[in-house]
Image (tube, rainbow, N blue to C red; front, side, top):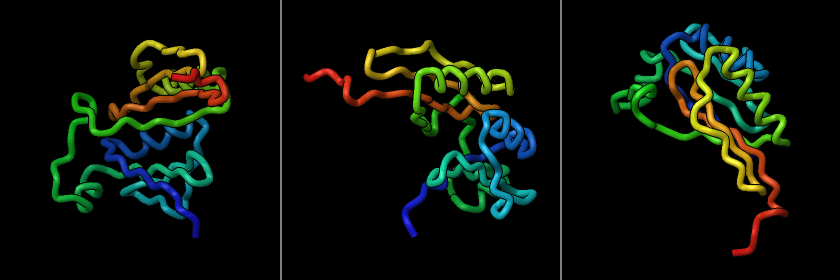
Length: 135
């Protein structure tokens, strides 16, 4: 089996979180979904396990942070074009997320950010590595 990423995030309302990510165009893997959590498929090798807080807590002895006020992680996803970056931000806002921070255009990289319904910070970017300036 090749390496895959299963990012685990605590959420307050599972149904709302599933609806949010589905509105962004990501599917739900029903094989790993029940009333305690859901598997959101970002790509063939990237999955997000959104887990209700009580269930998430069974996997850690640490306190769950309030991701609306505390940064726990910055999740970055690459897109195939600048247009796709803008599209996912538009979908996130339409689904109830927050367009977070101003867009940054470095010429070779374009990035935008959104916060999901639980305040998790997502950075979405397009990068053309052939255009990275020599330092």
